[in-house]
Image (tube, rainbow, N blue to C red; front, side):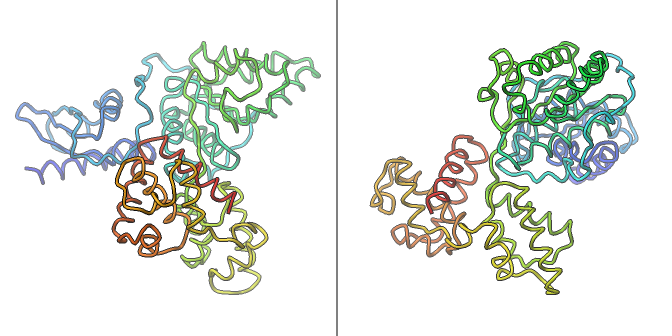
Length: 457
């Protein structure tokens, strides 16, 4: 029976996959599993958590029931349940209540993005490399794209330069254009918004300015911090923002800092934070490596795996700078006529790009020193035999950082922590990696320590 319902569900997923965008399918259906087919004609499907159950039940039950009936050849209905055996690999966007799609007839305005900045076709949800540092923001952006104006409104994306905020704005725009062609989407920078307003004042066409920005279904505004200390344009934007929100239109803002740190009146910043602020943290080593792998595959660049690991290790968190470094390596490869990029070439090319990291590899003593200082413990305790939680946890953190920031083998790391076995290091590394994915404070501690270690190395 299990094999029968499994084959039915596989066929159902093939049907659903043809009807949905790839990001939606991967997010909501890849980690589902058939549970049973009851005697009263109910096909039970298991998901990993309550959030996924509620989302699928509200949005896809009818579609799934139709697909199951099509495969089986008789009318069946689908019920979604939480099943603990289903792998919990999809991060929840939040524990906040979900919102179902509006049943009102759509406003049939033609899709139009020609008055805004153009989209980069490479910046889609499929091409966005997801890691611990950006999964929350990516999932929130996808949820907004799937339900414009009904989910997390406004969405406020923030993080340092080159971490992927603009990528997500482009991804939302292109997803909505593809999925809801009747909706009008506008993506602009804050600077463009300011220039459009100034032009309308000079031309005496304020109504045209208001029409452009207040008749859209989705407004995506990048670099909102650009409007600081510009009181006149802040008022114009606030009026636009309020009107769109009152009409249930989607607003997504991006900034290099959180709402509370933007130098505007409190009435502005509090509204920015009234929906869902989602931060993007600097990518860790694994995410940087995944981004670089995607880059060399896209560019068809022959790179030795060790060279790619080297670039990921020494790179700054800024993804644009990291890709710029790879562009430089690619040009060098072409001019030198060499068949492949090896570690020696990468080190030579990037010596002046990332001079600090290239010249001075991170040492394990520097990692231990910063961990001891951060958690207020002695080096003797860190490498000693004490098993109290206030010592074991920093010790595991230090082992994780040693594995992440150095090229040392597991046995050598174990030796540096009081002669511990390499399996102890493996256990510590796996535990901290898991905690980073479910506890934000652990992730933040790792990022803070990593930055401090790099700065003082």
